[in-house]
Image 1 (cartoon, rainbow, N blue to C red):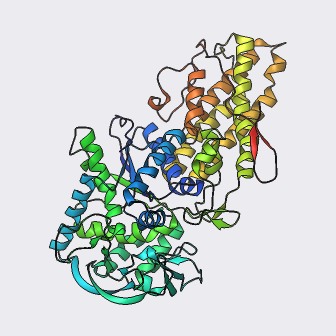
Image 2: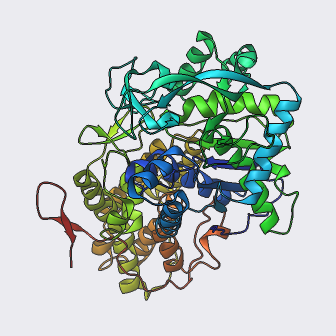
Image 3: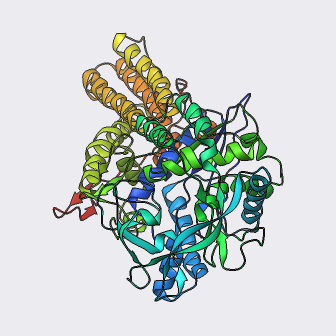
Length: 566
C-alpha cells in the first residue's frame, strides 16, 4: 500500500530538490518525537521549496524489515507481516491528518525495492566492494538461533546505559556492534549468549575512509554536531561492516553462496529505499526514467532528514555505498536533529516514552501540533517536550498573536468597508516601514529555511506578526473609523497586505490555516500555486467571510490535560 499525493510544480529553471526522510520501523505507533525529529522538518522544507517553484520529490516509507518488527512479532505470536499491516496504514493516517506531504510513502516490502537492492548488492560485489567473510556472532543456545543485533541487549561501553542494543545506544546515540556490549543478554530467553562463527557478506567500508574524510571536510552549511561527529568517526578509522544477517525476514540475497537462513541486513537495504522509492514514484507516474532527474543530475540537491542516531548511516555508510556504486548523487546535507525528550526521557516506541501521534490528533488541531513542535525543534540540542508548553504557545502565539491579527483585521474590514479591500490613502512612514518589513521577512525566512534553520525562520515570521499587531495598536483603526475613513482604510489595507505576506511565510508550518487565510483574502487559485511572494492586494477585491483560525485551550490540570474552549 502506498500514499501518493500531488504533482510537482512546473516553473522555469527550477532547482531539483530530493527530500529523503528516515524510514520508520513499522513496529508501533509513532510519537511526537518522531514527528519533530524528521517528518515535520522535512515537510516544512519541502513545502517551502514547492511554493518557491522548485521541483521537489519527497519520499520515504515503512521499514518493514527492521529487527524491531520481528521482535514485536515474536513477543505477540504474530508474523512480521501482520505487524507491518497494522502500523503502515496508521502511518498513512498521520501524514494525511498532519499534512505531511509525501510524494510517495511506500514500504520496503515491494518487488521494486527488492530489485533495486539486488542491483546495488550485485554492482558492489562485481566492483569488489562487497566480499564474503566469517565473523563471530552471538548465539542463543536456549533458543537455538543466532541473534540479530537488536536481539542482544547490554550495557553501552561508551556511556554505561544498561539498555543499549546490539546496533546502537539510544542514550548516547553511538552506533555499536553486539560484541561491544558489556554483560550482553538475549532478548529472546534472557540468557547470556555465546559467540559462534557465521559466514556473511561484508561491505568494504574501510576502503572509503580517506575519500569520506575529504568529502565531509568540504561540506558547507552542515550542522556542526553532524559534521563533527561524522569527521571524528571517520578519523578513528572505519571498519568493514557485515551487510547480511542470520534471519528469515528481509530482502533475499541475490546469490546463494551463504546457504539458507540469511537475509540482507536492514541497515544496508533500508537507505537504498531512497532510490527505490524514487523509481517507484516514477513508475506510478508513467515516467519510468523521471527518478534520474534527482539522482543522476549533478545539479540536483538531496537532503536527508533523520534523527541524530542515524547520522552514521546517512553521513558515512550510505555515502560510501553511493561512492562504490557510482553515478548517483551524494547527500547535499544531512540536517539531523537532536533528540526530543519527554520529562527528561528520550522519546522511544520500544520503551513507551511519549504519547502516540493519534492521541494528540484526537485532541488538537493539526496546525497547533505542527506549530508547537516547530517552535521547539531540537536542531542544535536535545529539547524537552511538554504538552503544557505546546498549549501555552497555542494560546499566547497562535491565538493571541497571529490568529488575533487576522481575525480583528478581517472583522474591522468587514464592518467598516463591507468586506472589500479598502482603497488606501497616502502611505506614511509607519505604513511604508511595516510593508517593507513584511517583504524583507519573506526573503529572510526563505534564506533560513534554505539553510534548514527552521525554528529561526518560524521565529522571524512570528516577530513580524507581533510588529503588525503593534502597528495596529499605534494606528488605532477602530478609533479613526469614527473620524477619518481614509486613514482607517489605509491602516486596514496595510495590515491586510502584511497578513498576505505572513500567510506565505507561515504556509510551510501552518498549511491548513494558511489555506483558510488565502481564501479569506479572496485570492484566486490554491495557495500552492501562489509562489513565494506576496503582491499588494487589489483595492476593491471582495474578502470572504472569516472564522477564527485557532481555538484557545483551557488547561484543566498541571500535567497538560486540556480541553478546547467553547
